Length: 224
Image (tube, rainbow, N blue to C red; front, side):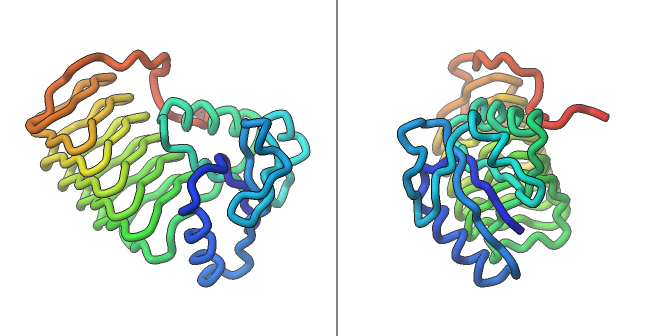
């Protein structure tokens, strides 16, 4: 498997790559894709930055798969992956080999870091990312283009809509719904449903504004 990784920013990627190389036969990272022109031709964690979208015709070869590592903004994550998909790029998952995926339904283009716990009957869509030491409890559903920051706890049967952003150490109690493109602030304790596009903070979490996002969903592939 030959991977091209979108976003040359987080040095933690190096350790994920090393873990994958130790456990997955024929795992290879070709290099990074990054739209910052200053990074083109440089090295990041020992791998070349191949260029940005302007180099896709050369970078996107038949034997290469793509994973988006961008997590600072779910809008940016969605838009960059959508561009790759429309360009004909094929996606893979980059998941730390210690993560137990038994009983998990998983899409493609997902990035999951070390020490994440995914319990039975979890469903994860396409193009989502979960950072270290988060707990995704039984029967949780994550939509497309979701980001779950480190140390988050999603209790059983929670549903997270497309494009939602769950901040560091946030807690969501059982059977709640986090709306699409919503933002849950760091450390928030969510005790009731969060509407689409809402930004909530605090304990208990309360809405402070509406997220101005121009997208209806976070799907990166056209419906067939």
